[in-house]
Length: 491
Image (cartoon, rainbow, N blue to C red; front, side, top):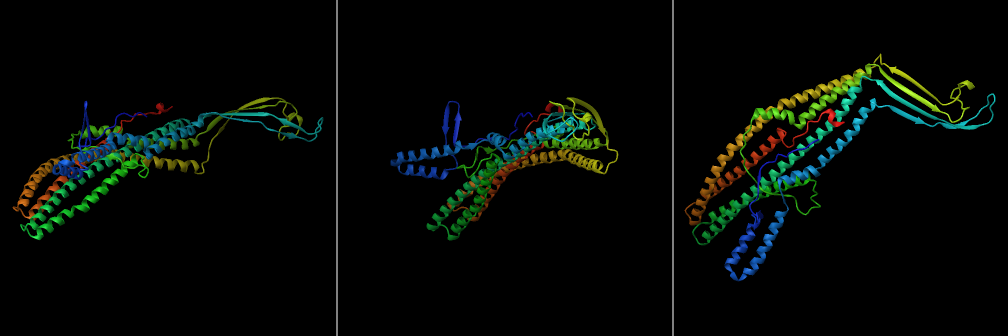
């Protein structure tokens, strides 16, 4: 089995943590600690005498942020570790080794069968010229070789197919696990960005709460405006908590895919980067034709059809005569040893001897053992053929559906990008007007909700587009380019 290239989605680098360029190292505080950074900076402005203390604390913050960044992993790293350590992939590899042993079982029908025995014992009794009890030992050997068997060619092909099936099962396991890992990685990036957007929205709403409180205390607004702002800010708390749980679930899936024990490791895998939108143009006809040739699950279905066909031929071979030749020999170190069942000295072992013969067997009357098994094998072959044809027919429809999803997410992303920019400008204008009392709390609430909805929708559009790209790579068989092994490759 040969592996070539991994086709990965495009993921941008995160803003912040650590950035390395040619000959320079730039360190920026990440978005994950904005509150602490703002608080310390405000204290430094208000109290210049605490400059040294602020520098020490900021150094600790930078160190902690950089430590978190060092634990971040890229999509390429996640997929590589999944390929190396995933339990399902490891189990499929063990199945490939087991298939090599199973091939020996199918091939054994053509190999000679040899047996060696050393009978020994004590013989007694009285014949003419004999008296007393004496021991004996002799050597015996048997060699049997199949000369003709109608099932030999099918058995040889079936053994090769068994290995090919195990190879493609490994390929299918690799594709499934890498695809699931990639989706979990995208989900982690999406939920983290969504949580950041909602955190930023909650920060702005809390600033509005502080503004309304100051206006209420100054007598410029009534208490209802302050209460409305407080309720609006608290409405985001359950959404942020649910998004954070979703993010943790994605991290657990990544850890499971990479065979990381969450209890043994102090921190879960932290994905690096942000989701990026990359438009994609597809040629549906050519991609469909290519997918029919390289899809691992489709290759596996075709191999099951071939295996069932060979099984049926092996069973039906019992209708034909089978011819086998055998050679047997006896080595007698001494004479005078009675042959089992002999009644006279002329029937005893005189000296070492070799005998050869050929025999054939032919099942003339079948009691249902061969015919019934052949019918079951044919039924299995027909079921596998129908399943294979169904998979082939579904590939075109599946690729067409994914192509439509890519087009829709692209249109949706363009629309929401423009709406998000407009909603952000409107929210900033209304926020300034609320601070000066020129806009009502209801208007501020509506604009902030519209801004949050458009930003969340834009993130969701980018997320769905990346999921569609991953589905396209899976449906076209692009995660790996598999070697087209044939029976002569596995000898």
